[in-house]
Length: 511
Image (cartoon, rainbow, N blue to C red; front, side, top):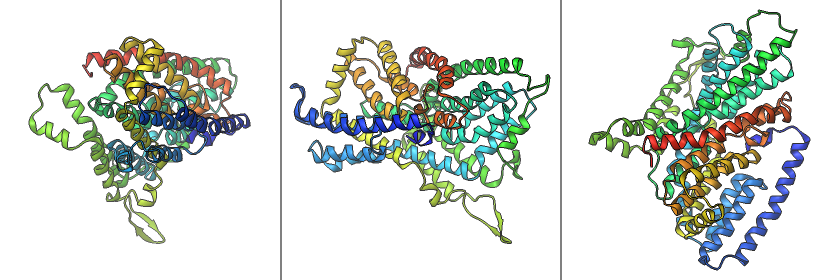
């Protein structure tokens, strides 16, 4: 969604326009066609809902109209065409998952406002002078860690000047790899925690919505971390290969000149604060709020994994503080925590680390998309469309087990996310995974989690993610270079993600 605004190529603009035009034509045809002709074994409400869902998905995939508008039109049509009353449909826009997203985005806004993200990146990069390869490795680590908590888009944009400094003396292939290093590391970091990417929250919401017990946040990280580490290793080997080859062949670098870490740190434009670790008072306040939120998010799952029979007090605490409540209570502190005072016109200016004018800039469009997916998913379940769709998917694909379903949905997510929004891809495929799993009589955890992860692992096109679009928009990353460098990662993701997720689900009995 946001990434497409960053594209600068005329060819890409033409493709986007054709895609939007196709959506404007196809979406209403799907609505009218399915309402007029639908399978006879469907209940009338289920058939109407199928037409609405088909139209909504077509608009999401083609982005024919703004995603936020489609997110509201879909549920509105559910009410207008008599599928369910408004009081029932729009309840989903108060789902706790949306408040997790809201609280997480407020924390990210506070980190950006206080420049906490840049300061942390500088600490990770500034320890010593290094070769370009090692600088890019550390840059990848810094970007992935930051994007696991903050925005992957802002983390990538922040690291672009850093990688430019790291490869300034190398040739175009190395510069392209440096920029892709930031983009791909941000995508890998974006799968580590549920709050890092809306697709992650959609996967968790789908599991909780269709009758499965909610998956604790700690479990998500437990499943995603091995995938991220394995893919990061694949990528860093490729970085070392390309940069090493460039250095060996280039005459622009005189051996054995050490690297450019000071240039990279200067590119962040960070002034150290007066507090411990170079952090100012406001930055420490944001750090403490984020740590408090993560304790509240991760502790219930950690207790469940490590303690066979938790004490009643611990169990009650976990029940009374779901993730959405933790997110709002923690984020609300940002409006009270004082920022580092600033001297303005001879007077000391005090303010909280986050004000409403800044908090109001949150991505409301994505939040509405999450709510719309939950609202439509709830009606899919209640009208019986879930059972019909799951049975059709199983019959058409001929899948018979958990491993087959996980691999099938992972491959579909990989292809779909390369052509459009990872959030829309997850909104389409994750509920399908739950429906098919129910028809097969298997646990939906592995298929849905693997689908959510793969939806965020697009490495081949600028349309796959905002980080890819930022790298491409720099003008230093030709589309051919992105495909060539991203293809090994895409293949590795498909080979690694399903088996690792299945293995860990079995190991920790997450069914």
